Length: 321
Image 1 (cartoon, rainbow, N blue to C red):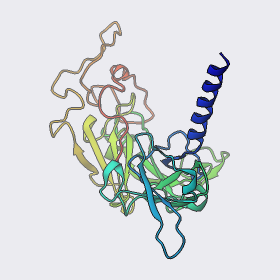
Image 2 (cartoon, rainbow, N blue to C red):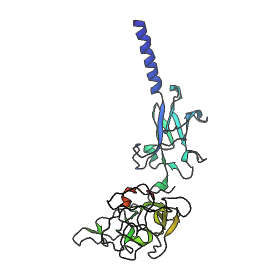
Image 3 (cartoon, rainbow, N blue to C red):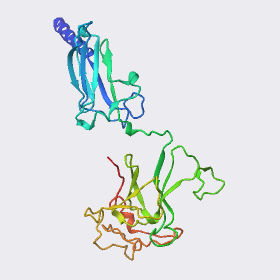
Image 4 (cartoon, rainbow, N blue to C red):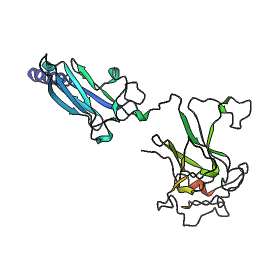
């Protein structure tokens, strides 16, 4: 019995020593620059990791092994003790594989602290590598922010709903109610918001995507109770140029329904609630008039049928690759 215990303990100690002799780490995108992998910061697979043992001059360091980060961004390598110190080189593939592209993805800033592309190890331990995609970050510390506003009733009816602010911009650090927000004078007043589109141009929208290359904003139609659709209906995508605001022009970019990608059954019959106020789910978005939306934004409305259509028809959010 004593011999068996001795052999088992020795085997455990050997396994422990083998595991502790590893160099390992994770490659990931560090969006907040703190060097710690946190929620929402994706792992990066496909990073090539090379290991070189040190050689005295005039000899060249010897490549002793390679590894590649796996699907969760992890790599490991187990050198022998005599091979230390070791130089570790991380390489971003040049082929564009695994959503990586040399020339666009780079080792993160402050790499000497958080994981540069060349590191040195005098013994086992953790060596992480952090990838940075500069386009993920704003160049301005107080960038502009764009978002939709919602206007009651029919923006296409010719009343006060139409010329109301439906898409606006502001600076990220702005505080208080905008001086053009219509709030009472006693409220905290901040810089005015910029009006980029009226309700008559876009109607109710929700999804917002910005093309950094083209410097254009895309926003998508959104079915919202009490707020009417714009000129393109439920399948509309609108294009806004923040550098050349046009509050009188046509901002329509593409109508998905018109090109054969239905966002609702435009050819069907709109189902309005029955006399006893029963509401049935309809696959048709009614016109602003059918929904009972008036022309003036101060007038009340019921718009009951849209209640059961939210999240089922038109668009939700939108992203730009």
